[in-house]
Image 1 (tube, one colour):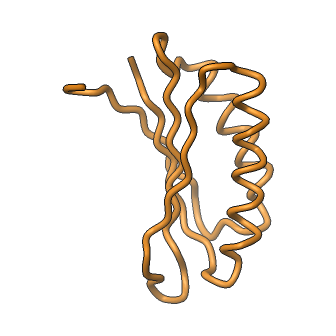
Image 2 (cartoon, rainbow, N blue to C red):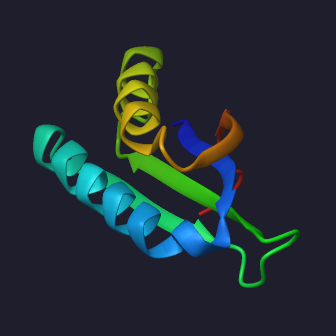
Image 3 (cartoon, rainbow, N blue to C red):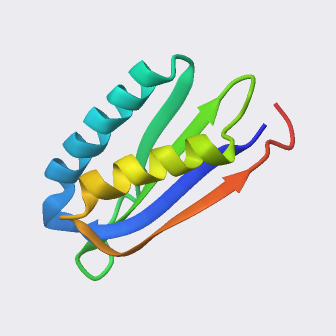
Length: 98
């Protein structure tokens, strides 16, 4: 079962707007795919006036397949385009233990 991790940087001053946009988009994704688990994390301290953000997605029991990963990435990259500094990095991992 693959889980999706997406990380990127944004200006620290945009934290409130970015957080609200991601959380709203994640609610929409969870409505479209019942059972989808989504989280938003951020490093606690900015570096060079930027925060590093991390979105995580899990979908039991199926996992995140390629079509779902593409849909998640397309929706969030469009929503977050005004705030992202540099690329969004998408990676999938498998759990080693539960």
